Amino acid sequence: MGDTQKITAFILAGGRGTRLRSVVSGRQKVAAIVEGRPFVTFLLEQLIENGIRHAILCAGYLGNELKELLRESYGTLCLTYSIEKEPLGTAGALRLAATHFTSDPVLVLNGDSYCNFDLEKLMAFHSAKAAEASILLTPMVDTSRYGRVILDGEDRVVRFEEKGAHGGEGLINAGVYLLSAALIRSIPRGRAVSLEREIFPGLTALFGLRVPGPFLDIGTPEDYARATLFFSH
Image 1: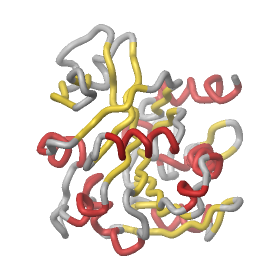
Image 2: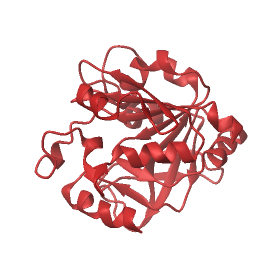
Image 3: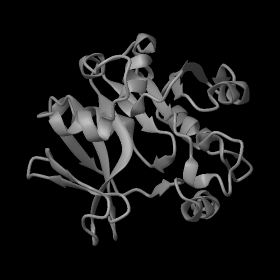
């Protein structure tokens, strides 16, 4: 686990959680309470289990409240905050926080979803593919809510299919990425940029690693309601 200790991790926590307002009011989405504690702590524990020592929380809406909640550390994890003054999107938030990372590649987690992963395996896959970006993919019986990711025979991402475009079984983006430092530094500064819509589709060295999951997204009240059962197993 020596190599994983050197990896800087980002948690994307800038979302306003509009769809969750009816059940989580006045809290940042990643701070929604699950099993009596903020959802983001499950992600922080996952980082610790994978040997990570330093995590940067990319926050915007209620970012200072998140900082007050978690402070400067969680267990053995050192926490840093990058708080955007206006919404910058998933890629723009990473570009803003680029001065904080010290590793190449870097690990990125979506703050409102959870998927089991093994960082050593992801790093080995990323290296073997000489990837600019590697994303975790997990199978879903019905992909219509999430969109679908299509791979070729060498695990290269061929295309992303939009939410609702196709139902049925397929692979979805599990919200865990390993990205090269050069890729993050190439993101335009000072404006909203989406990793999923603007950066990933233009890459030629984008690969998908399939993992069995389980996967949870707390973006809707229905899925948030499932979270307690998900973590109690």
